[in-house]
Image (cartoon, rainbow, N blue to C red; front, side):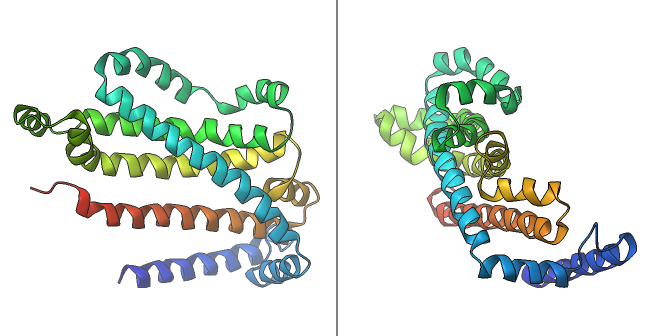
Amino acid sequence: MIALYRLGFLALLVLLWMVGAQAVGRNLIPTPGDTLAAALEMIGDGRLAEALAESLAVYLSGFAIAAVVGIASGVAMGMIAPLGRTLDIYAFALAATPRVAFIPLIIVLLGLGLEAKVFIVFLGAVMPVLITTYSGVKAADAELIEMGRSVGAPGRRILLEIVLPGAVPFIVAGLRLGATVGLINTVVAELYTAVSGLGGLLALYGNTFRMAEYFVIVLCLAAIGVVVTEGLRLIESRLDRWRPHP
């Protein structure tokens, strides 16, 4: 039923898109047909595939590193109370700082290549993962933890069987947020460093008012976001059986 609702809403969006294109003018808002024709042309000559491969390499690399570092750091801060209380203020401060502010320094240190782009994506994606993981670990059921300790369960078992299962919704929420911010930072990285990938095409077509091709890139970025977030939703549903249920 939800799938039907989603398809219906998509049809409504396409209808509004068509109406908007007719009202504003095809030079500013291309019709769905013009956008589809541009997409087929870009697929045919390999432009879209090449740019997509470059952007996915940057995005997935940065997001994967952010996921590992963010989850590990969040768990450590949540399990070791003095560490968490010491570092949480700095984590929140970094999360509130626009990542664009660090780009000149990153370029000076890492140059304009792949490493700089991956680090920019990592820097954007890691904080939502870290903060939500930290919150999830702190929200673990204190009674279950105390019960586990009272029967002599080692810390590793408490972590794996009580703390992490209860923190799964927090962690997945952080991964979704991190995935979204990481995708945005991928485009930012490709604009501020060596202009390439989907971000480079976005700048090229936007500056030359080739709006059909521009819409293709925007829709491609949206599709990547949907695939990643829905994949994380599927992972969460698989992990649900691991969580303790009352």
